[in-house]
Image (cartoon, rainbow, N blue to C red; front, side, top):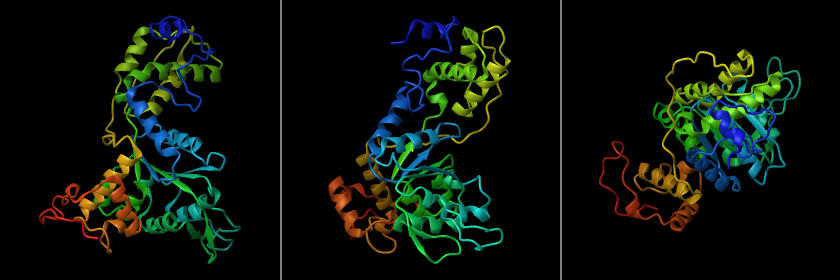
Length: 355
């Protein structure tokens, strides 16, 4: 139940940035009460206690890093490191060294041994942000580490074992990158065990008033300002804006607004027009077993029902044939669920699953 000051602030009446109102910001920093956000949080709670690889998908600014951090904190690995790595922030020539480390003298400029992100994240969680931008030549090495949990530093022959839970995040459609030959299919299947799709801000507009109050409170306190009210017309403009940059854009707009505001009333700077952004894919199943079942069925359809062999579903999923057969039985996957992939396999639907 909202306090009187929370409700009246949205209507243009005073509120007090120093107050901590319940229900506005959870301890994990996630703000909102919309059904779309609750669906995401239910998925997070379901998968966090497992060691399944997770692929977080969503437009830029939707909070992918925040969700990854929450998954880590809810997992059994919470006492171990949570290491973040942005695949676009490092020059391509240094990516391998950053991920796996290097020995002194391994290349020009390597004046000392460097510990890579996989080694730093041992027993913990590694977030690979913007995974869609990982160079194609480095993808087989990442796949090997995910499958065997071992690697060598650049310039070394010593094998290092590192038990890491990997969370990948992207705002790019990896399926399209696979079709274009820019992303390895086997790596995609390995990362996409449990997908979580984050809704853009325009699909959770009911959270905007809570987010506005949260960010105004935060920036007012940080800048030493006092914002006593948010005019109703200002809130209406914020609600109508499409927010192509999502929560990140909203936060930056409100930071500027706090800086520009005088006299205790929030003054809004001009809002930029919408720009083209990548839309979030449709949400996947909301339980772990449903997501796994759907993914296995999808791969079996792509292989025309073939389980074993170099072109079989087991290889694509990165697991043993016997493990896949066992999971299929457990999840109730039958030949009736398997249909040929359109265009790629024009043959008639198989009558049985080839094992």
